[in-house]
Image 1 (cartoon, rainbow, N blue to C red):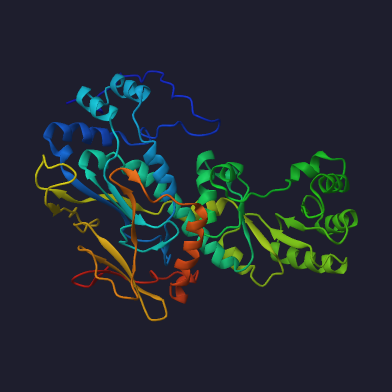
Image 2: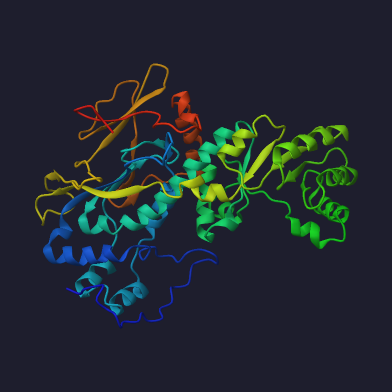
Length: 465
C-alpha cells in the first residue's frame, strides 16, 4: 500500500480544475473538498474488506462556544447540494492516480462513487445543544467516510455564523440587520455567511451572489469613496439622490457629521429615506443626528449604524434612537467563535465485513480516550417540552423514542437510499428558526455568559452532558 506521506521529492503536476458551469461559482464536482486521509482510509479498508461494513456516523458538538446557550443548525441545504455534486470525474481521477494518492482499485471505486445510503438531520434553522446528533449518516464505511471533511467544512462554518447571527438579531430586537461582511472573509464564505445570517433573522445582505444563489434580499447604496470622488459632499448627495431616488441612504460621516446631515436634508428634503453613520462615537452621534433630523423636519428619516458592531455593542445601542444596523467582521467570524466545533464520528458498524450497507447487526463503537470520550450507538433525539410549549430538555436515546404529546422529534429524513428528499428553501429555515427560538426558555436569549439553555439527557440512564 502506498505511503501518502513518503514523497519528499515529488512535485504535484500542474493540474487545472474543470471549468465551472457559470462564472464565479465553484467547480461542479465537490469530491476534492476533502482531506487526504479520507482516501488513505478508503484504500486501506478496501484491502481489508471493512469498506463494505454497514456504518453509521454522527455529527455533534461536545460543547457550545464558551458562554453560549444554544447553537443554530445551518448549512444543511448547502451540504445537500455538495452531496449531489460529490463525484470523481476524469480530471479528479487523473490527479489522484498521478499524485500517488490512490491505487487502481481505489480509483475504480471512486469512478463509480455515488452515495446510496441514508441521512437524517436536525432541520435547518433549528437549535441544537451539546451532544445533539444534528446529522446521522448511514451507508457503507467507504461511502460515508468520504463525506466527513466536506460535511464538517460546511456545517462548522454555517452553524457558527448562524449561531452568532441569531444572538445579534436578539440583541437588535425589532430593528433590522444588514449582513455586510463580504470584504472580511473568503469570497465563497461570504456567500455562505449571508445565507446563514438570513436564516437566523438578518433582513438583507450586501452580497449579490447570495441573492443570485439563494434569494437573500440584498441592499446597498454608497461608500466613502463615492463622496470623495465628487467635488463636494453636496454634489455626491445630489448625484446619489438623482440616481437612486429619495428613499436612498446617504453616508454622512465622511467629513463633519452635523454639516453632512444638514446638507443631506437641504438636497433631499425632509423625506430622505435614511442616513448612515459608520465611525465615531456611535451612541453620541446617533442621538445628535436624531435631534438634528427632527429639528430639520425629517422626522421619518431613518438612522443606520455600521462599523465593527457585534451582539454586545448592538445590545448597548438599544436605548439609542436608531433604526437598523449593518454588521460585517463580527458576523463572518462567528463573533469570536468561527467554528461550531462539530465532529463527525463513527458510532456503529456491522460485525460482518461483507454485510454491506443494508444488512448486518450494528454494534456500537466509540472513542474512549481521555478528554474526548464518545457515546456509541445510533441516536434519536427529542425535544421535551412543557404544557406551554417551552423546551425542558434534549433527550437522546439509542432506540426510536416513544414521544409524548408535548415532545418534538428532531431528526428528519434528508437523503433516502441516495435520493435527496430534504431540500427546502431558505425561507422555510428562517421561519423555523423563529419557532425554535420561541420554544426556548427566556434566559436562553441572554447575552451574558451561561450554561446551555436546556440540558442534554442521555437515556435510558438519564445522564446529563
